[in-house]
Length: 564
Image 1 (cartoon, rainbow, N blue to C red):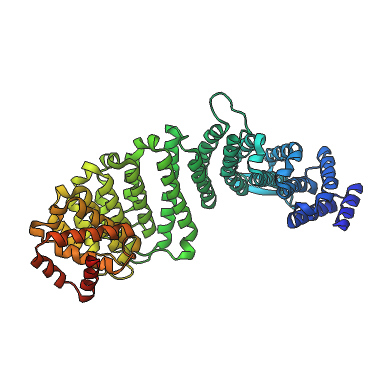
Image 2: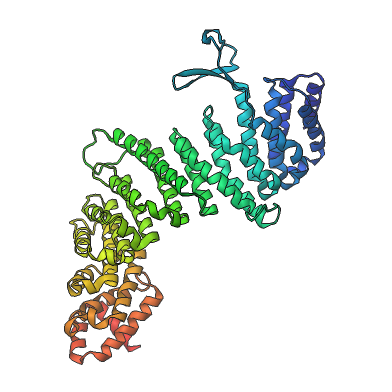
């Protein structure tokens, strides 16, 4: 370090800014490596140099212009909250450079432009060719990165500068001449909102009128991200915007008005449709509707697709009131994503979105888009097990939340679930998750709509697929469901003269034999209680016949339980 300081001071005295920039970079990089406790004796000398350089007029191509910005950012990263005394000097400089203009050259005669020195580069915008001053653009990018780094490091310590940093970076979300600047600006948004939220809670920021600084910033940032998403042409930058928008909406909750909501939905659907077109064009001549793209071809696009769907889900949850009028617009899009020529990932995500809408809006969702249930039934007959699984899950969600609207679709729903459960490969490893999900969905139909069904017939089908032994989480849910149904509607479920008691006891016996793998402790205790009750209430000959029908190991298990 002593030698670096000598080089730095010598270069400064000799006005050798190339060596000065190199030495400042080395010193500040060492700071990051060793930590603040080992650099305290060096800080003042370097800071004084930065102060003096900041007060001088540095030429446009001077290497110290960019290095000065990086040095402030690294010092802030190294010192953390101890950087506060330097913020009033460092941050205004970063803000100024982030806003810097005069980086575009549009000559009267393009032939006169000399690109040989590397200080400018050509850029095609539509049918126009312009030239960019590379050093100025680099300075702008460096400043944006510095502001992002300081916001991430200082968090609420950025306090009074949070809004100014946001007001500087938000316009950069749509900066046409640098995708990296757009990426940095988008990445910074959730960091700034988190900082503002904590700073507001801790009382570091003053309230204006009746609106908190945090809510005010949310109302500025979230719509700006939506606009940026609607304008973004590069999928990789759209992915960053989607991530940030998702995080920001979770923090801000409801801030978009009706027009902004409409723009958000159009932007999301545009991303989904764009990726869909790309994916299908890549699939090209692949035979079979259930083919998926190879991971290396599909990975990045699929990530963006997933992010868009996740962002839509977050929006549905956080903007429930304003989203309600748009359900009808979303339904055709979901159905379009589920048609046979779509790749598996699209159909799977569309069904997940349907589930999210159904859970949030319940019967209202089904009143607005009844036709959506029909595509669920078709999806259950898909040959791809992933699609079958999510379609069955969606039918279960519809049964639980669809209310009276779902009742008119009961026959179709039961038939669709039977198609999944009765698939020739239903119990093979690839299909078993879909099978178990369909059994769970049928249980929900029994639970919420059995008065409109031929319950005995559906019950016999359901019991024929119990107990579940593969998807252990789903098994615990379904077996609790069975136990609850027996508890609340004993006579109806057991059938005339307790015709189904033998089947229910057999299912219980297998569950109890497995211990706590297939049921929670609460469910196990409830089953034991019910078995003891029925063993007392049933004629001795009937109960003896039921016990004898069990496999010996199950019979022994039940006898042990009932005698305890």
